[in-house]
Image (cartoon, rainbow, N blue to C red; front, side, top):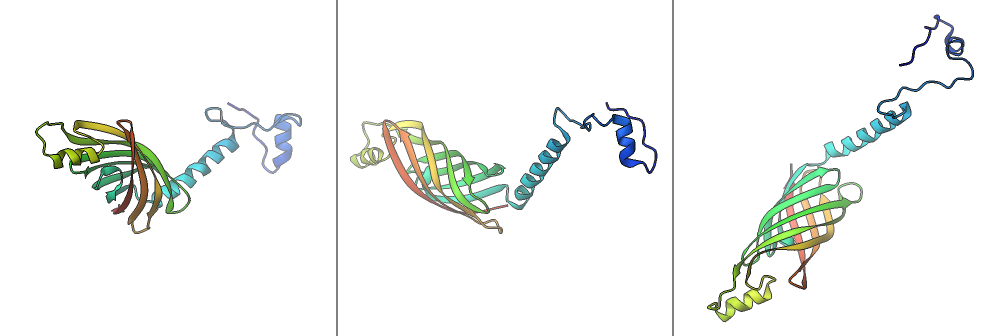
Length: 194
């Protein structure tokens, strides 16, 4: 705590020098070790961060054709902080899927490059020797190959646009890695946010 003699009214600068001396530095108030200018800078950064967050929608939803969910998926997208998004959904790739991703949107404004990763759970049937040739071929063409429920790592790279009205448009490339194979899908998403 800093204690000083109160300055007489009207003496301003002279009273300051008399109280602290000409060779002393001006004391700074600190909060958790931050000097006064650091607190001001921190407040400005917080206010600059809060303003864009208030202008953007926090919760979105979209239908994705292709992409991490398979042939089609319905997804809920939560803007966690700034440009960081978490997404979960339910989809279909001849069998049910559940995509989960975390992504970051690079760029200013409402459009940008979206990069992220996650996993998709595929609920494939177990291999059955009595399956018809068509069923076995279908399983062979998909990643699962009759292995039952699997989770595959995935990534996404693409373009994301969110209008001020809340509509969402995305185009993504989504490679999957699993069973010693890499399969890439293109995805197009349309939805909204609130």
